[in-house]
Image (cartoon, rainbow, N blue to C red; front, side):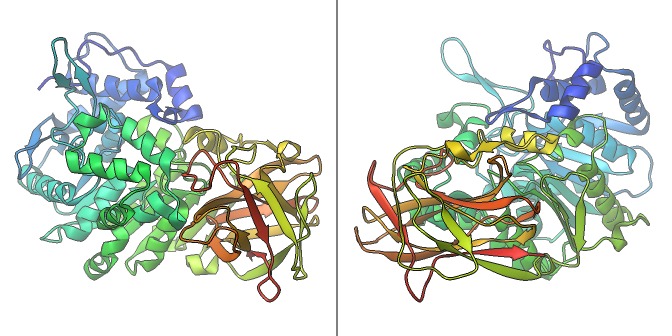
Length: 585
């Protein structure tokens, strides 16, 4: 077959590799960086012999040469049960010795399986056959003059099933192909992002239970929570994913999925959306995974904007199989993206591969000595903490009560004594300086690089939000914070977004965590007690720093179910005083 690189490959430079290592794989919240994509294209062009000039650095040339000497390379199309043809790439190790195969469904990007060619070459040199493929519907497609479209060679046919039953069946068909092509001793799945969810779902649903281990990087456990957590639609994440498929929505999704996306955007027929998402959630099949005792490795980030961390942690906790969870600073694919794409030190990928080696190759390494959960402390990249389980991350809870009126430029208090009878009022309908991120993916990518966003709390417009601040004091935040407050909505629905900040003596701040909540079916003007969990965090607050809780009514990541420019009232009821529960460890 023709390869993805025909006619458009540019040489990879050391500066380009350095840029991938330093800046990661995202150019924006809706695009892959040209540098990262260029490395994958150049590797495949050289591997297939279609590069018209030398396009690799000396290090990458050597990597390709080593694999070519030890393996046979292929670029097949695998035909699914319904006739859809999946673009795939194989590396078959030479010799008769039985070897395991690692199957890698690609992530949800326009470049399909090409983006992580560097990973496949590394897996081959570690002793694995490799079969990478692009899930149905994913990959670049281009309009042609006179009408119609043409797909890139790495693009798979069909329409995107969003990790649904067609994708599970495709995964089983790919296993069939792998067994015929490689006669593997064992079968593992490894996936990043979309590929990680598919990996878990294929492992749980393959009729013959043929998957021996799963490595799931930047994954999800509960797609319903990722789309509709606390009743709030995650509009920005879905918009970004739709634009990441590689082609127009009307070509990439079938009519039923387009209708579902339209319902989601409008906030209609949400029970149908929930059922659709539950079907695509590994959490729905955790009993099958446990019954099959499939070893499972999770890698996730604290400030994940596509698949928030709590859903992944909850699914991880439900697993009773051999398992491991790494939690990192940053957002989706920031920690491991560069390590899957280009050479350079990358601990998240190295640990994932070490775990795979132990469970599939039987390598005697350090993995048996790892504790089950390892957390990188925000924003201290050299500090990681190991715990026997997620339950051991939190050892105690500090309850800080919300007190005093906030508004008119004044902060309320966070303290040890219950306080009732106060009211904090603000106007809905405006974005504020208190926001979760500047942009999907890239704000968290900057966190991973050591440049977390700095907020200026003096710019928080108290006309559109309420604030409470604690006395200075050192705290080791470890786990899932929880907010309880009385809200008096202006309509039958109300959206609140809570943010927890670490505030320095100069008034600048860094975000620890956040989470939205949408109240529905309320009575306008009548107070309702609400409570919700924020996303998990592991964060050290310095002795001279304060905690600030901010609640506003609008964030660009989420739907807003408030009446526009109405007044929202928050308060604290005697006997059910407002509080922030702070997990410590």
